[in-house]
Image 1 (cartoon, rainbow, N blue to C red):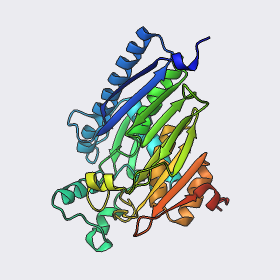
Image 2 (cartoon, rainbow, N blue to C red; image 1 turned 135 degrees about the vertical axis):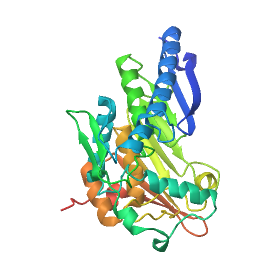
Image 3 (cartoon, helix red, strand yellow; image 1 turned 30 degrees about the vertical axis):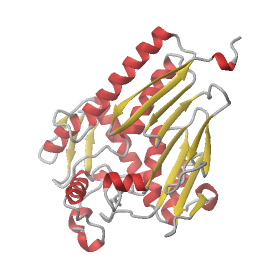
Image 4 (cartoon, rainbow, N blue to C red; image 1 turned 180 degrees about the vertical axis):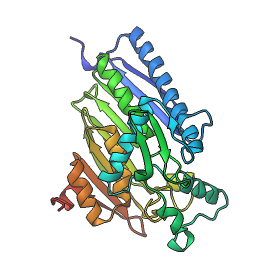
Length: 321
């Protein structure tokens, strides 16, 4: 039996979906690891090319261009993913909404102009109220998509990394890769099995404004984690208002905090971390009761960057009625 010190770590990284992707495993045959790497890189490219609203050759770009005027034929994978998104829309009290593509475009343009909308007065409420995943009409039998109004544009940015992680996790399990750490930018993480030198993968949350030891550590074993929030790095990347928009109001969510979710599904984790960042107390309680994540942690910061850790599972341990 090999000692732990002789374990060979196998690792690669790449750029995907606007961030760094990392894959780490051990104890895998070298030839198969090379095949797995090729599959994963191809799958990441396939998913991004197919579902990015920015890619003019993508299925989502084509649907966004045509679906307001006619039913658009598409494939079963796209129908299935959009169906899941519509379910999340309902289960998150409409806080996860993939129809905000044009609202995101406005935000992107405003960021470039250094004039991002941030208050209700800046938002066209007639436009915002015309959005909603319930206005995407799917015909599963005919495999078509249509929009009920021309204001809709699908943006899968809030679920794409989780979807890719689920596909990669499924591949690993089918091919007996039993232990792995799979990560998008350290904010969307899926683990299989355990760390080569322990019983779990320890994932530390750093203070957003100071360096040092982690202020919260998550012990992941065959589980998934996603973090959403406003940190200095995010504001540097997306602008002073951050990047999270409330789809019900069109407002940027500027709170200085992060939400971290640990659950069994990378898709659930990604959807929940953003939805709970936006949610008020009543919505938080209802959403948590529907999903029952393993952990849900909020870390908030005051004006002098002192932090407070809230266990949302404990804070909202009620049955929504």
